[in-house]
Image (cartoon, rainbow, N blue to C red; front, side, top):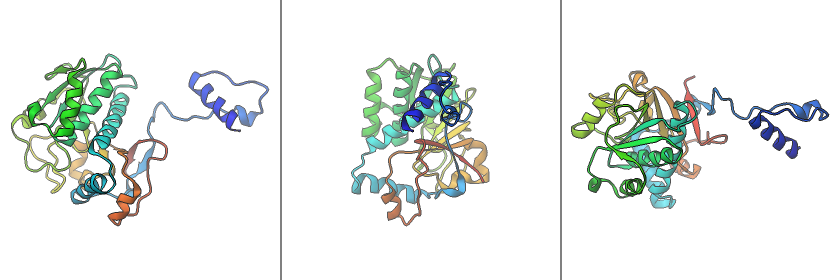
Length: 274
């Protein structure tokens, strides 16, 4: 049976007919992924939703007690962010113009990792930093230094078809200011894909500050955050997706959470309200 399943998969991908003398139950096409729904969906109520304090503890446990580095999590976040960007651009990033807005912390590092994946996939990528390179966190600076060795442009791209918001993560506090505020105000015209949380939405308090990003889609990490499902946040979060960054179930068990992985079929899933 595994042989027939394998051939079904290949035939489905190539769009060819199966052998006519095969039994009908083995000639049935199996649809492994619908082009209209490239990612599985999970019900919002089936997931634990984390507070900012719980997410901080997840990050601490990952690095200090489970020896899973920030670089590993950042790379997983960036890879999944690039996958979602590809979907939002119609399934093929080749030749499409993408602007990545990156802050100095871990959120920015995930955005820069995505920039590299998109560049390798053929996208025309430009990046804009909200802080000088010397002020980037170590893991984020490493992502940036990799990009400097590749053909990536610096500066705002007015013709971008997609803007990636990786300016401020789940720990943001108060209204964005300085270069952060300026970049948020300029992120208009093209659809925005936010990493973890749209910049300007303070997850600890639920306050929506000015200025803020209004995202077409948000890719949150590990588990969704409580404040993302507030009614006031719906207009700025857009479609909510969830990405696997390799958090073991044992981490959630330490937090006393009941957890069943939603990533059995894909490292990226869409969260749908009940």
